[in-house]
Every structure is written in C-alpha cells, then in structure tokens.
Image 1 (cartoon, rainbow, N blue to C red):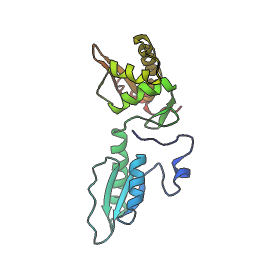
Image 2: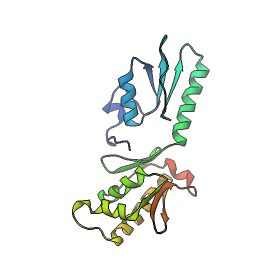
Image 3: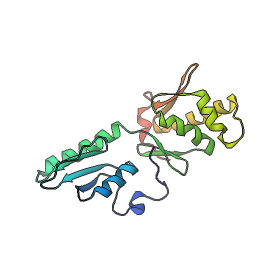
Image 4: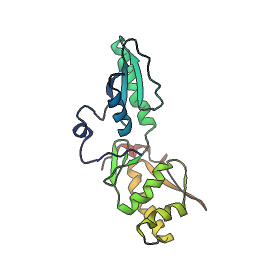
Length: 189
C-alpha cells in the first residue's frame, strides 16, 4: 500500500518528482528511482551508454536506451501510462483518503481500519473475523453489526471510484473493481 500525504502534491514534497512519468537516467539516478518506487510513481529509465538495463518487475517502470527516435520514446511513455492505469490498485494515505486512479474519497478512521485489510488483499477474500479483529484493536470489542455498518458505509464511499465490496458468503468480503460502474473510476473527491 502506497502512503503519501494527499494535501501536499508530490511535486512539492519531492521537487524533482512528478505524478506523470518521471524520466530518470540509469544508473545515475538510482536513488530517485527508489523514491519513485516507494511512492508508486511512473518512471521511464533512460539507460546510459555502456550500462546494462535494470530488471523492471514493476508495471510502473520501463526502460529505453538512447539514442532513439522521438516516436519510439513517446510510444514507450504512452505504453507505460496505459499499463499503469489498467493495473491500478487503490491505496489509502495517512490522512484517511482512499485513492483509485485519479479519484479519491475521504473515509472515517474506523472505515480506514477495515479498508486497510481489504486493500492488502485487493481482489481476494478477507475474512470477517479478521476485519472484526482489526476494528477491535482500539480496545473495545467490535460487534458483528459494527462491521456490517462499516461495510455498508464503505460500499457507498467506494462506488464513485469504480470499486465495490462483494460479499463472499460465509467467508468475508472482497474489494474489487466494479465492473457495472467502469466510468466512475476517474471521479474526484
């Protein structure tokens, strides 16, 4: 899960980085590459002469060797952006803002507790008892009804982001992309 304060733009937190594709020299800007990776930012590595290209296992990263044509360079940037959007996973920042693609919604602290586990297992089932235990971490035992109420509220909040929570009967819940509401994914807060 990526954690970045939402009230301060990336560009102000890290002046050399941006939300769009960051073009970095490899291996000279290895530290910036690592910062981008931690922040979940897109990066295109320009491999310097006489250096081996890195292994890019993250969908938010690609590389190109210079010299190349402008058309090839632009095509690589476009492909990187498209791959990234197709594989977007929601993340919850430290201020309780749930982000998905270009959209975001604020959630309560209790909802954030539940969402944290659902996001960790995005697309997979999270057990009800695990979610209740997470809600109970404050010292007060969370009832079954308390969890149901949090799930109901979260469902309402995540829908504009193109997400849904599906009930896995007898097992738990699954946070996933809402295939019935694909146009909502880019709605802002």
